[in-house]
Length: 267
Image 1 (cartoon, rainbow, N blue to C red):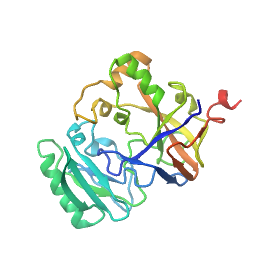
Image 2 (image 1 turned 90 degrees about the vertical axis):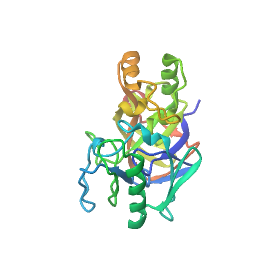
Image 3 (image 1 turned 30 degrees about the vertical axis):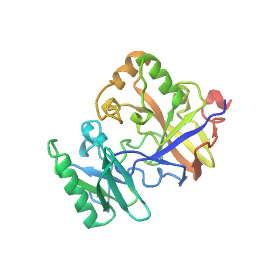
């Protein structure tokens, strides 16, 4: 069975809902366009938009600690800057997240929505060219912007030991793929892969935190994913990070070339 892309997602606002994409254009050393472009900073968090630095996820509202966020469905139109928030099928807010007035409306919404949680009031933050991703710069990588990949066979292996369905969106990846054996992606680290016309270096496995315990459909903590991974598979990894070496397009159905993915596969 050929290895290929099953789905592509971006997350315009860190900690909020995913957006499916039919295709994406990637540039060298960059993540997916608009992925984690915005974040909801905690009141004490200080960010210089002109000189942004990587900050630990604890500086922001996010699912690891604030599972209530999973109750919301959000959408970002990168052409207009329009940002919408829904809950249970009802539109709660439409505002331009790229404009100061719109950000003020969004800040006010989340100040009320998250008022019972510590760290407020939240505020929307953005820094041109920066991504508010969880990953620090990895050894051997040129930068800190990555594309995350999840093997659907590895999720199936996890489902087998849990005995219940595991929504792939718990893992908030950019690219979900099929056709590779479970956990084989962990052997790609240090190698290169091709996805459509894009070439990437696989720089690290993705270790999993308590955010994966949150069911994206119910906003409840119902599976201790990190503990299950460690107990059943002797690691707490799901997926890998890739750094873009040569840009191009990826889309649903794109073939994934593993000829240089690892020393074993390459030679």
